[in-house]
Image (cartoon, rainbow, N blue to C red; front, side, top):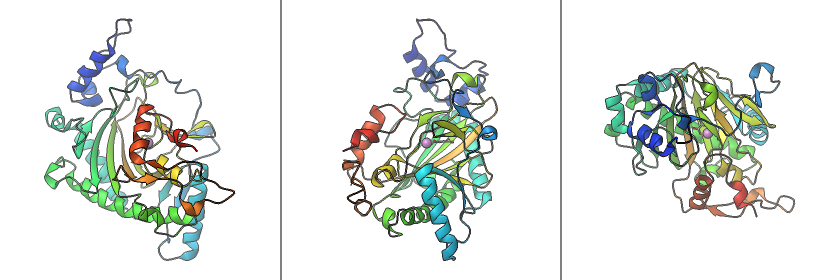
Length: 361
Ligand code: OGA
Ligand code: NI
């Protein structure tokens, strides 16, 4: 499994051998790996080049306190203005005092950790690239297409419109995933209302166009890395959805591209990170932005994060800029596109920048 550096390096076999192990990056760690195998080398950019650490950056991702939004009009209006500003300028924000207890968040991190650290023989049974499966354990979703693999394993659940049967969840995280997903779905509804209001639309607008009909949970596990400068935890990308709600542990490493600089999304215990996906940028006609982000690999770890992705379930639905947001001064930037076409384009480009420019009028 050790990556050679010679010209005769056979990437295809290395990738296949790794995938066939069904043990993920965690399997390499369990086998005592001390060097990053070559298939994980990331040459896209010098990772530390444009990095700006929180300590020497004057700007940071907005933090929004949701206290009072359900029973105080003044507080709610203030929150809506902050959400609007964050979605227009950053495409990212952190929320505190949302509706989910810190206990549930902590348990979700622990459940993810238990799954990825359990005996490899049990873990392996969930390892699959079968797109029809609702519970998928896999390292690197597009392993065979990407130029370099990420230092990360993931456990995914397709939760809506139809969740897996209870017995299909891995036992070590079954209860907490079911509880967390129910709470996150409720929170996503609140969020879609705030986002609709921030756009000047009726509260129910984004829900009515199906923004949360499809729901996927990705429980990521980023093992400690012996040579973090050679690889990356999650390559820079934008999300192919409407909104993502991310729970991260205390390790850090998530960065967003803001004014051409990589800015740390500093972990806050009990907070959730929200970001706008490509589809929301499309329907808002560029008012809200889908921003590139990445996760650095680190010596310390594991790092655990849980991403909840909301998108439509029906690939044949056609989306275009919302009519109410258009005017003579603000004509449509995008043509109508089916989700199927969007996804095809998103993956054809390889994970990375959004595919939106392809659909400009
Ligand atoms: C993602 C993502 C960030 C993280 O799943 O799309 O960007 O911190 N995750 O794991
Ligand atoms: Ni992402």
